[in-house]
Image 1: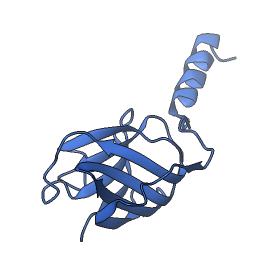
Image 2: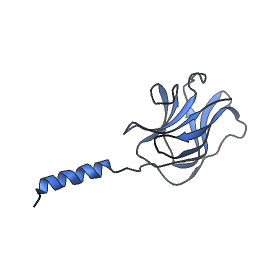
Image 3: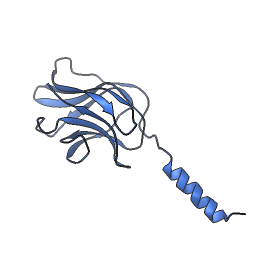
Image 4: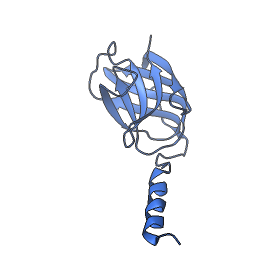
Length: 140
C-alpha cells in the first residue's frame, strides 16, 4: 500500500497544476464614447494554443486616451492582465489592469501618455504563470 503522505503530495501537485479560471465570464458591454476618434486598431491573435479574438482600438476624446477591446473573446485563466507593450512579448509594457471579462466590449483608460509608435502591441497576459494569451498589433 502506498504511503498516505505520498498520495497527499501527488494530489496537491495535480491540484496546483490544474488551470484556474478567475476572470469573470459574464459578457461585458461597456459604453464607448461615440465622439471619440479611433487612432489605432489591430486584430487579436491567440498564442501558445490560446484562443483570443476581437479588435483592440486606441481612442482619443478631449485629450484623453483609452483602449477598447471590441467584440473580444478569450480563453479564461487566472490573473489575466491587459498590457500596452513595446514588444509582442511582455518585456517592456504598461499594465492597464486586470481583464474585466473573457468576452464583450471593454474600456481601459490610459493614464500615462505612451508613445504609440513604440507601444504598438496590446497583450493579454497571465501574470501569475507568465503566460501570453494573445497579441494585437496596433496600426493606423
